Length: 191
Image (cartoon, rainbow, N blue to C red):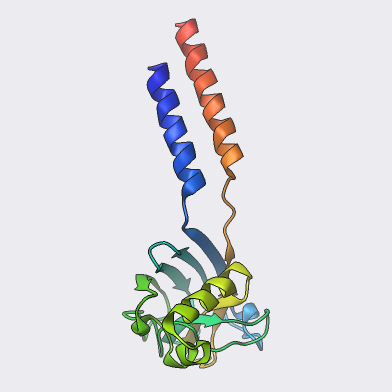
């Protein structure tokens, strides 16, 4: 039992240390717009980028918007709170719920496809590969934001800067594994 637990912990530790996807999050609000928008609307976005598979997963929830949704996408690359051009699909993410004041959205973009980007962003970068690199660099440096546009605020009713979510470093997983092994050993000797 102890050996199996130790093996499982080591596998989890190695997997966590070698994982390449990076998760970014953003709290969406009118105060984050430039200029700020007075709204009761709020939301939250989780965006995961995997450089190995070239996939960008977008997960958004939003509530209490003043207007009804007209578009949503990721803008890149400018230092906040500066406005930036749209990097991803235009005019909106595919299948984003439109004409509503609350909702959820989940989709994965394949960043090797032109259809995942705003054509103007690809042109400005010079190629699809360069567009992916620019978006990845923008995410990593806090220079991207997710925006939800509405009939009330065509320029965007709520937005948030995408920042890397904090995850435990590999050393934390190792300490956790050691603690679990110690706990299992203690239980076995006390039984």
